[in-house]
Every structure is written in C-alpha cells, then in structure tokens.
Image (cartoon, rainbow, N blue to C red):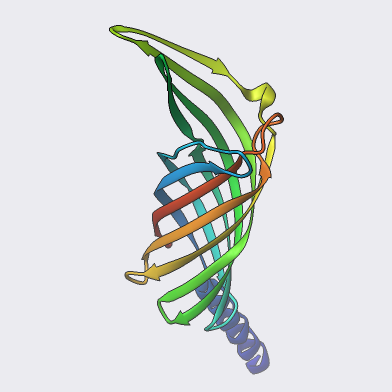
Length: 196
C-alpha cells in the first residue's frame, strides 16, 4: 500500500511539472505587411492578426511554440500617369509558425522558426482618380494567388508578467505570393498574448 501511495505521488508530481511547462492562450497584434523581391515596388500597409499560441518549455533556456493565426496581409502601391492609380492587395492567410525559443533571461526570449501559411482570401482593389472623378473596383485574385506560403520568422518575446507577454517579430516570405509575379510576403508584427 505504501509503495502504491509513493508511486501515485510521483505520477501526480510529474503531471504537475509537465502542466507547468505547457502553456497556451490567445494573441492579437498589429502588422505592417509588404512585398519584397526582384522588381517589386509595392508599398506597405497596416493589417492585423489574431489566433492561438502553444508553448512547451523544455528547460530553463529552451522552448518550442507553435501558433495558429489568422493574418491579413498584402501590399499597396500608387502611381500617376495622367491620372492617379491606387492599388491594394488583400491576401489573407491562416499562418502556422513553429518558433524555437531561447530564453536569454527568465522573461526574455529570442524566437526563430519556419512558418507555413494557407491562403483563404485574396482580392485587389484599384482606385482611379482623375480630377473630381473617382472609380473604384475590386477583383477576386484567388485564382492567381498561390495556395501555400512559406516563410522564416525572427523576433523577441518579453514576459510582462507570468501571464501576459509582448512580442515583436519579422517574418520573411521565401516563396512567391502570385503565380505571375516575383513578389514575396514580408510581415513586421507587434502582438500581445495571455497565457493560461
């Protein structure tokens, strides 16, 4: 009986330790998204992201943190050729980054890892202005947008408290966004999250 009690205590202690190392919760953020690549002259725009993160802390120094995030991305550009053209691309993804975290101190980590994004919505808005006349049209661009996007992310996470953290990250796309263009995604983001 005594051996069984000791064994149960060991199991409960191990379970408690494992649960203490695993956290999850929501995160939301503001992004500055743009395109980069050969012959790309697009400007950037402010967007947003929201989703869930999971973190497993393997030791005092190392953790792994996958996420599932909806991210509004894209770029825009303006040009003048007798009339003023403004074009904005909205390319939205479900992004799944898997970040490897190195804790420099107890509450500050350097984060690095790959990301795969699944395109869920794409459109282009074009606005043409000539004098007082303005024409605006929106085109669905899903057929010319690649379904999957790959990138690499690098950033920092700072734990404000044991439950709340702030995060800064830049994710550089490694594959072209469109089937006819060399443009790749770029995404600078600041987000805040809450750990359960």
